[in-house]
Length: 200
Image 1 (tube, rainbow, N blue to C red):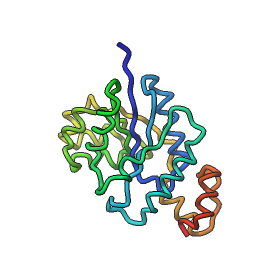
Image 2: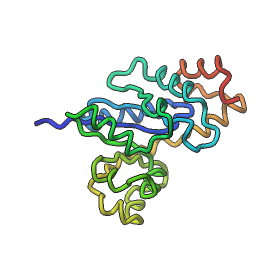
Image 3: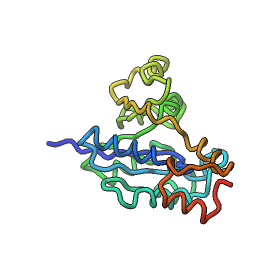
């Protein structure tokens, strides 16, 4: 039986960048078993500074993905009364798409912290992780330093995207300074940011 996978790309997407979309497309192209990728923005209930309102980040992601095939946006974490843990979100997708394997896309920075997350062993045991390698940080080195990651090394797929070295934080800083960010943002997303007076 042919293997079918759905990838879940979680993050704050504050704002969503062209590089996020480029990564999503690269992931779909790299593994043809991945039939669909969902962007899943975290809610403002997540304890993170300067996180734009849920509706704005969700709307920007929808604008960025409106013409994309096999890439969708889920508000599953935004509609909950509390901040959902990653394991809970993944289990919702697993129960909804029973014929698919579910994998979680995350960056090297998050992989380093995964052992401190809610039920990390359940997460690594039941779901594949696509770990995005960026800049100088090597996934292999992160795994070597963490006993739980070493135990479930076979669950971790390293995806090297070292050419993408710009973050949402840097783009927010550029927006605040009134600098040009055309090459980092989808034109509809940029228009939405201007219309709603975001990141000023």
